[in-house]
Image (tube, rainbow, N blue to C red; front, side, top):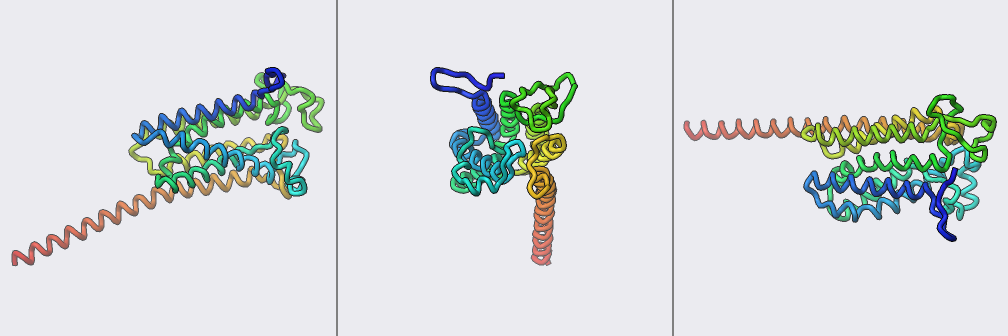
Length: 287
């Protein structure tokens, strides 16, 4: 299967093309979301370079510290060969790291511009989920991110050169990239639906927390069938981190609403006290 197109001395990889399509789709969704909220959509274009730069840095560092088994190297290899950290020609980008880097970039940008981080995170995350759904198809052309051997109708053929050690005799495998793409697409539609149907009940940060629940849950489950999972000290580090993120985001979502209810209750109490004080003063005057 071809992995790109060659134009003279230049080769353009399908993986890169698909990633850029995903980025553009995310930008378009974020612009529409900003406009719907009557916020300045120009901020989206200003944010994008920050997101891309720190997103790529985060994605690479995630791989360096949690490389998959198929890469044949561990973190100690990169510590001994630091220049290899910059070499991404053979793959090595982790989506969780890209998300972390992107959120850090958004935090820095909103702080410098005096914008609300949680509001803009809610604007960004639906498009992020869509970009992930699109970007996963790059794994199809690279013939990577597949699961165990399978005879199901949707199983995909993997060339011998891309088969993992111990699976050379098999030719068709679970398209794990497809499963994750579908899950991310579900996440996208869920966030878009909630952002509109439940707009009056949502608080700033709710969509961010929901994204940080749904995506990690899907990733956690898919790690069970991943053939080249990242193990550190005998533990699937991606799976453990995804579980922790989902639990933390669930708590933050609950805490977000508990705090809002407490603030409303405190506000109502203050209003009631002020009313009682006013009534008392009026009665004293009448007396």
